[in-house]
Image (cartoon, rainbow, N blue to C red; front, side, top):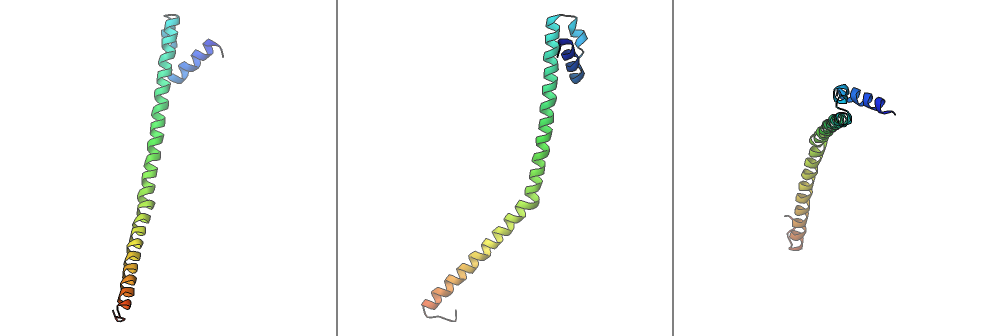
Length: 102
């Protein structure tokens, strides 16, 4: 790609007026290229941040809607199983002590 074509492409993508900077020669063109790069990099990073924020929101919703209820159910089941084991152990102790009715 030739320099004029590259400059035209950068100007179109970044909305930098290369013609104004070209009046200052090579330094103007370099400044225009740096400005165009900065604008493009800034846009790329803001787009990336927006995309990652949306993904983060999606994952938070997933946690709220699916993971937390599943964990709540798991805790309830564990509490019930603990109570059942405690009752079973108590019955076994009572049987060993000779109290079958307990």
